[in-house]
Length: 419
Image (tube, rainbow, N blue to C red):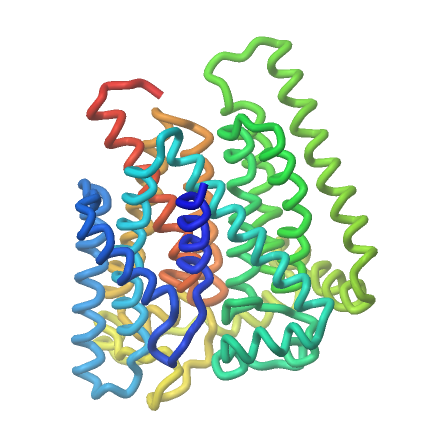
């Protein structure tokens, strides 16, 4: 019990650890501690897929450092992100290895549970900050959020909440990951009371998405048909008519319950939720149809570097240092300016490996394969709005899920057990 509680707390800090200096955060320190502990205990496990990801990230770190040195240390953000992500992935390897060696039952279910509960606890913190201004300011002072967050009136007035993170759209997609893994967690959990807790926590995740950003809502709407289809058809290998009907009724009932419970919760929130959050949410339907102010604004940000050298090799410029301003927030554009085409391939490579591995995992567990695929696809889609690859909080969740999946594949290939 104590060990389970400790690993759950470590997982929360590994996902939501905040900055303690401009260069160091608790995620980075936790990753270093996990690597040290796992090596001392001799429970580190690396296989082909994780080794490939590490190789790509190591090459990306060296490449980004070389570009920074070549351009005179004027913008070091992309190099710092690459190195931090590499250390973070090593920490994820160690964390999943610890779960693997300490679990007597289904270690994947334990990981899913702790990730989901971490996101749910963060949702509680976000909602409390939305309701209580004093708590909001206290948390932001603790995390030094006003130093790093892109300040706007919606942030300063408490209409949008980033919680323990430093993003808004990023945070909305991060919280969405909880809803993505919910069907898989319900399927894997055999405890009725645990399932009830997971379901009752879901409306909090919905609210946390509404009060952080529209990107999570938009991607959630896009993914909903896939999640519903997967929950109905991919849970069992063999369907009988009665089993299909039972599953269909269960999924529809769950959707209706979550919708009704969320609407009820909306009414209990302060008036600013209806005035601002729901009003902002209506714009996502225009964005899905590729219309509206958001699409018009983003269409002006499709830029490419002027020089061929910068196009192919980058200039390390993310628009945050002493180099010229880049009038674009689009992640793919930012990657071109900072890393060029060559470095962009290295940066997207871990996601391509994860998407391919998820597709291969369908032979083991189809619902797990779809879940992890959507988790990584969400970041790729968000990168069309802002730089979303290898971000602090999302990458922690993504790395854990990828490694848990490859651990399962490796174990089953060694034992010859069919899923």
